[in-house]
Image 1 (cartoon, one colour):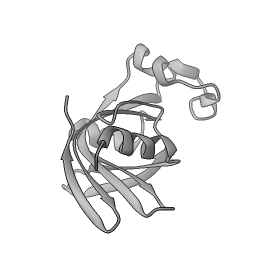
Image 2 (cartoon, helix red, strand yellow):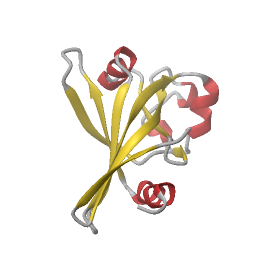
Image 3 (cartoon, one colour):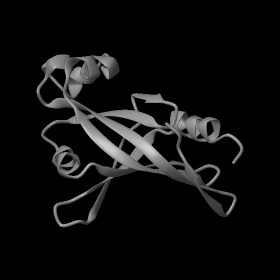
Image 4 (cartoon, one colour):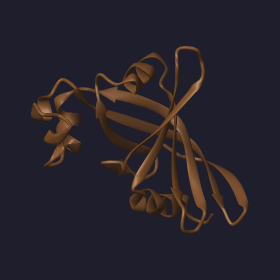
Length: 140
């Protein structure tokens, strides 16, 4: 892959679904599909919304190791990013990715105590395309 930031960034921007994984209290991976990221800084930082009361928030608070996967089913390619997930509940982070219509999920608005931000910071990735995989580092 010539330009990981461009290739993978384009895949993330076109993905309608984000697959995230966390580690449960027994050390087993837990995976779920979520909506597309709200924001990203390159491929290193990815921001998502979720409910503060969710099982995933507790798991990330206990163990920040995380994995995110994006795929392009049309061309049968995908990318797994490994890193750490932070749970952000400060007003600045919440306002940064808030969108009109989010009241449907968080009725009390941007200050809803059940609304928080997941900030994923990637350290490395593995890209699959054309029947080949390659691992790559993600620079700071």
